[in-house]
Every structure is written in C-alpha cells, then in structure tokens.
Amino acid sequence: MNAPAFRAATDGSSSPVVISVKNVSKRFGEAKSNQSVLALDNVSLDIRKGEFVCLLGPSGCGKSTLLNIIGGLTDASSGSARIDGREIKGPTPDAISFVFQESTLFPWYTIVENFNIALKFQGVPQSEWSDRTMKALKSVGMATFANHYPNQLSVGMRQRVNMARGIALKTDVLLMDEPFAALDEQTRMVLGEDLSTLLAETGKTIVFVTHSLAEAVFLSDRIIVMTARPGRIKTVVEVGEPHPRSPDFMLEPRFSELRNELYALLRDEIRAATAAMRDPVSAPVSLHGG
Amino acid sequence: MNGKEGNTLATRAIQVGFLVAVGLVWWALAANRMVTPLFLPHPEAVWRAFARLVSGGQFWSAVGVTLTSIVQAYGIAVVSGLAVGYLVSRSRYSTRLFEPLIAACFAVPITLFFPIFILVFGIGPASKVAYGAVYGFFPVALNTIAGFSGVGAHYVKAARSMGASRSQMFRHVLLPAAFPVVVTGLRISFFICFASVLGGEAISSASGVGNNIAHAAELMEPARMFAWIVFVIVTAIILNMVVSHVESRGREH
Ligand SMILES: Nc1ncnc2c1ncn2[C@@H]1O[C@H](COP(=O)(O)OP(=O)(O)OP(=O)(O)O)[C@@H](O)[C@H]1O
Ligand SMILES: [Mg+2]
Image (cartoon, chains in turn yellow, brown):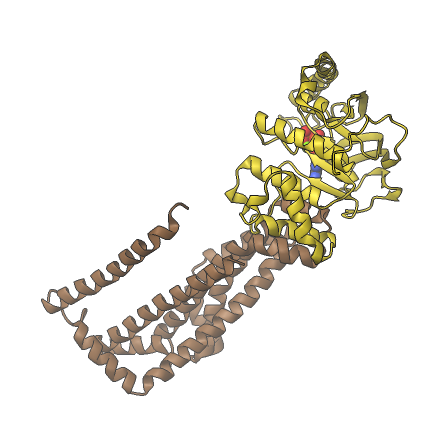
C-alpha cells in the first residue's frame, strides 16, 4: 500500500514554516574595501513544510549564497535564518542535506562507500547504512552500480547517484544548487520528473536553484525571482499544480504563460547584471589608474 | 587507462628484455675487448670479484652502514616533510608564503653544501644521514603541500554539509584526496635519499657502499668497483619494485 500520496499544491497556510529567513544580508570582504561585494540585501523568506521552492535570478545575484546561508555553510552578515525554529549557526546535517551542481561523490570511494560515509558523517547507526543506501539507489534506478567508482559512471548517472545520496540522508530539507546544470536536456527532464515523484512520496521540503525557466515552472510550487546583485527578492510566482507532475503539464497553456512571465521578469535583471559587468564607470577600480 | 591488465605481461617482458639487452651489450663489448677492461671489465671478472666481496666479511658491514644511513635519512625526511607540508597547507596564506620558498630551496643544488655537512657532522655516517634527510625533505614537503592544498573545495563543502567532524574530514576527505600526490613525493624522496647517501659516501666517508666504490676506483680495481655498482643497481631495481607494489596497495585503500 505504498502508492505515492498525491499532494495538493501547497495552499500556503496549512503546513508549518520550516525555513525562515529574516532580513538576511551578506557582504563578502570588508565593507570599506573597494573589492567588497554585497551579495544579498535584506532578504526575507518563509518556506513551508513540503514546499518546492525555486530560486531564480541572474548569475551572481546571490542564489548560491542564500542556499549556503540556509545550509549553515556561510554566515550571514546580518539578519538570521532558522530551521524548525532553531537559529542556523553551522551545518545541521540532521535536518538539511545538499545536492551540488558538480557531482560531489568522492572519487576515492565506490558508490556504496560514498553513501556509507555520508551516513557516517551524519551520525546514522551503521546497522541502517546498507538498507538506506540500497533504497535510495533503487529509487533512482542505480542499484546495479553500487560497487562502481564514480568515474566509471557517465556524468548523468553520477548526478543521479549524487541526488540519491542527498535522499538517503533522509533530511526533511533538501537544498539543491543547480543539480542538473551539467546535464543534457533529456537527462535533466527525466531527473526532474524523478524529483517531482520523490517529492510527492516523501514530503520533503526542497529549495532548488536553477537557471532553466522550464525547470523552475515544471518543478516548483513557488518561484522566488531575485534581482541582479545585490540580490533582493523581486517577486514571487506561484505555480498551483499538484506533484508528481507529468510531462503533459509542459504542454498546458498555463505552463508557457508562467514561463513567459518569468522571462519578462528576468530579462530586465539580466540586462542590468550584464550592463554592470560591462560598464567600467560603476566598477570601483579604473583600468588606467595607478 | 584501457586494457591495463592485458598489457602488464607484455610490458614486463619488454622491461626485462631491456635489462637482458644491456647485459648482452656489456658482455659483447667486454668479450671482444672493444672497451679497455679498465673501464669495462668482463662480466665474469665482475662476478668473481663479487663472490670474493661477499665472502670477505667487509661486505655486509658496508651494506649495513649504508642501509642504516638511508633508512635514517629517509625517516627524518618523511616525518619532517609531512609535518611541515601539512602545516603549510593548512592556510591559503601560508601556502602562498612558504610554498615558493621551499620550491626555491629545492632548486638550489644542495650538493654544493656537502662540505659543510662534513664540517658539521664529521666524516662518519651522520653527515650522510643529514645530507640525505635535507635533500629528501623537499619533495615530501612540496608534494604534501600540493596534495593537501589541491583538495577540491566542493568535496570539503559537501562533507561539511553532511556534518563531518574535523577528524572525519581529515581521514575520509583530505587524506584520500591528497594521498596520490603525497605518495609520489614519498617515492621521489626515497630515491633521493638513496642516491644522496651513496653519493655522499663516495665523495667523503670512511665506510659504506659508496666509500667502497670510490675506494675500488682509486685502487684501479674495476672488477671490484663494478661488482659494487651492479649490486647497487640490482638493489635499486628491487626497491623500486617493492615501492611500486606498496604504492599500488596503498591506493586501493
Ligand atoms: N567566497 C566568496 N568571496 C567573495 N565573493 C563571493 C564569494 N562567494 C560569492 N561571492 C560573490 O557574491 C556574489 C553572489 O555569488 P553567488 O555564488 O551566490 O551567485 P549565484 O546567484 O549563485 O550565481 P550563479 O548563478 O552564477 O551560480 C557574486 O558576485 C560573487 O562574486
Ligand atoms: Mg550559484
């Protein structure tokens, strides 16, 4: 009786808040130094249990930085982030796990060993390791490769396994920083579907960074559109569609409407971001100086 | 990468064949007296000289002195090189500061300072141990720095997010990531210690294998000299095989 529990689209009020980001700013480098970068400017965001939230914005707007602050890998310069009411001061491996863009499978361990070591780091008793590893590998159809080394797998398979490792950690929250960026389009669509199914089955809360508009619409309950640097929240777009989502969703008019809406929102920001990169006037260091 | 196993046998055969060819050329040159026996004695003469050496009693004590010196020099080089290298690699600043300095010192021909080693440590084995240890220190330190500072930041970040403790980070991430590069340094260092100790003994020493080789040369006894040299070459080949074996075993873990 393990049929996936079809979730209704989050109605925005019934589930409790899991992640709460309040007035978070992040500056890299000394404030007075002309090399300092204000990556995030007063960002506030609540994420509810079981929600799938996408961070979308031009390159360099602070998406990874925000994800790292939620994951406790980076400290905020001001403001605070909380997980289940606890203030985040460092990694909370019991509540949050990461899936990064590059495969972070350790090449010196086999796939199984990679899972075991992750569970060991997380403090899971050894008796549970093999069961959880095999379940997670089966969920992405990679069980037969358990004893391979990562470099014996294709890039797509590696990222599949990388995702499975995040799942095996069984945290309520999964933070994914462009997990499919290195993959070809077909693979990323299949993995996206897998992820949607997974979300429906496990009720995990997922925060996902992507540059793909279609991916954002296909996967998200809510899309947080950010401004060019310094990153602020420009607007939030809701996608009212239950998980798991079928590829047919992409054929619906609503899908392309949302996609176009996002593109319109982002276009100005991307223009602003590239203009800032090209325009030497706004850059503090003159090429002809010194 | 591909077909590595299938090729091992053929590769070995070529390598052994090369050694046999070198021996045959030696034999041919010496037997036809194409090179004067003073420079290249006949292999049979060398063999007889070797048999005399081994039965003479001096042989094993000379080998003992040299081997002990090599082991001591290498021990010091490894321990100090690993410690210094690891400490330097801990911060990006100290890496940027010290790595070029250590590399520059290694580029200096340390042989030039050999007379100072003799002055300070005397003509006994201690000067050779110190000389070998100093020379052997550099590749260990440099490769340890390279190994540990080259660990991919994304692996460290991932392990941190999974809650790895400091010791777990070292044992399961930093160490295995740095291992291949560090081991290469250990291997280079070993042969530098081996060569330095023997070379030092040949230049200035009262005992050891290197001293015996220099001594035989001075006395114009090429057969005895070659007996020692062939012994050293064979030892080096065997050691190289042992080191490679240990290295590949280590890589599996
Ligand atoms: N460790 C750091 N030190 C200094 N500056 C940093 C650091 N990490 C990020 N930044 C700066 O902060 C800004 C935001 O970076 P971040 O990686 O969060 O952007 P992003 O939105 O994830 O971009 P992308 O879409 O290209 O991945 C960038 O301008 C970047 O240069
Ligand atoms: Mg990023």
